[in-house]
Amino acid sequence: MKSKISRREFLLTGSKGLVSVTALPFLLKCSSGKLFTGEPEMSMQQSDFLKIFAVDENIINAVISTAMSKGGDYCDLFFEHSVGNSIRLEDGAVNRAGSNVDYGVGIRVLKGDQTGYSYSEEITPEAMKLAALTAASIANEPRKTIAPQALQPHQPPNYYPVTIPWEEVSIDRKVPLLQELSTYVFSLDPGIIKAGIHLTNASSHILVATSEGRITYDHRPMGLLSVSCTVERNGRREQNHESLSGRYGFEYFNRENAHRLADRMVTKTLRLFEAAQPRAGEMPVVLAAGSSGILLHEAIGHGMEADFNRKGVSIFADKLNKPVAKNFVTIVDNGTNPNIRGSLNIDDEGNDTAETRLVENGILRTYLHDRISAGHYQTAPTGSGRRQSFRFAPLPRMRNTYMLPGPHKKEEIIRSVKYGLYAESFTNGEVNIGAGDFTFYVKMGYLIEDGKITRPVKDINIIGNGPDVLSKVEMVADDFEMAEGGWTCGKAGQGVPVSMGLPTIKVSGITVGGEG
Image (tube, rainbow, N blue to C red):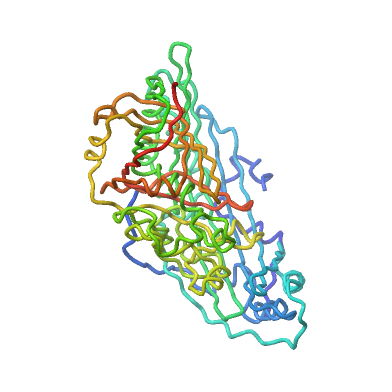
């Protein structure tokens, strides 16, 4: 028997995290680097997810049958219920807060490598069948309706266990933490004239069912704490920010971690007053462990997403099983790192995730595959089919992309450089996926002179080519770190959370902008 829930009832019951919102009534108007070592199971079961979306297997099978009625080869349903909250403080006072609830289903039909897609913000049999007919129009071969395969439940592992779920945390538990953090930031230096604190959190329930009989689910937490400041000295001002993010519950954003984030942010901001410009030209560049992995993500990782290679766009399209780097270079994209921002228990096609070795001992071994590209290359999906929400069809996307530790030491790498750049913090960048050419903005780094890290430098552009840089990686240290920041990757109009990591590495030559 169908259990029906109205949109109004859903909105009233979908956000336990706002139970104390009466303190801020306007809210109602707003719509570390360790690798994975185990597979704890999720506490929620399939029946819990079916109740969230007020559907049962009969309803799901009926919608799938409708979607397949015009001759499609395959269909999947992607149900999503997401609740998010946001609080922003400026100079210790709450100046913005909001919440949002998203609820709906996306229906995809594949015919060969063509995609028909539609979605509905109303989860009723009637609305879903109408959306299914729209998606089914990618095919035009009316045929006798074939009964879908019986749904076989798949219980995923849980790569992001939490202690305090965001659904249980009201606003009156968050604001004191943020106010205390703001006070702490101002205490770190008398020149701080402005401080901003921003906490966002989200919790998403996902249910995926396919025409091949697979039904599976996921509960995805996400938290992000961002801290910024402006410092003034002798009439000169410098600004900076840092963030801490991951698939954690409220327990991770405690006083200790918040203060650690603020300490790092203020220390880097103060160093900007001492920073100069390097000489311009090509020189060795040492990428710092951790968030410098953004260069790996942008300049190399996108070129290893299978859709770019299937279409012949990527420069890596003809390099499978060929050397692309030194034999001590191994690059992976992993969905299983515990609590890391880009991790997934299942991807957005319902496939299991895993560690995907893109480059192994210098050899390009595979690409990142969704269902469509895996069919083209006659291989298995890598658990890399991702989408921003139920309103979008999935694409091959990165999750957590990083280079594994190598045989060298950081000190050994620094000593090997006569004159070069130690790049520590990156911000904006542009990449041409086809050729692999990139320009990145280094917010902060240091000069390396005669084998020693010396003066800080800032606001530098580095220009190069991703595959060329990969081939010029001469040394890889054993000090791997995963980035902690709140990175979001954009592609085809969709943004998804990702992370990246890197040990300290040396690239023999990259063009660095600076003083002439």
